[in-house]
Image (cartoon, rainbow, N blue to C red; front, side):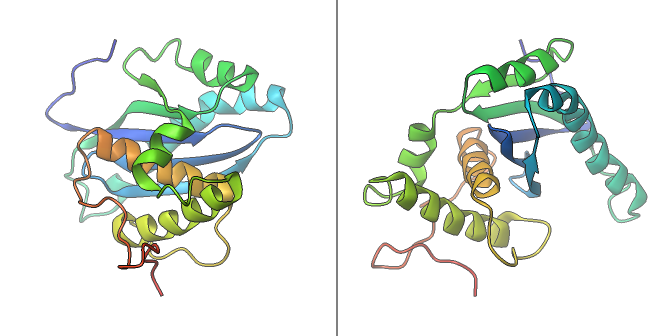
Length: 195
């Protein structure tokens, strides 16, 4: 059960593409992408140790950056309210158990078919390879349009890109991002990416 939000708080969504190689992205309730990373855990034991720290540190890092910047010092405190996860199996247990004492964070399970059906064309969903390519392009667009860190440079790691895309879908689902269509495309259907 999710707790009631205070007026002096802004909600956060942490989106995770589950795996030992794991993508993570963080959105605020205004739809801004605050952070994204490709994480690597050597085994499930390391994953179990680091997940609770990751959840706590991402929230505290965002708040400490805000407090140290005079232009944002008076803004609302940001609080992790949603943890959206794509994936399952044994690795999911680390994330679920890390929320045992965090009753104010709502765990949301997202099937890849769900977010892909909302962001990708039927042609892009025909194979895993095509879906991953489209996710990388969509993630570039999202970072450019909604990110607070400037355009992505270099190759976009697939797990990070999929977490950005899935988080974008979830932020839209929560009503934090309103854009029609969600993914900007050329008239031929290709995804518009920043130059």
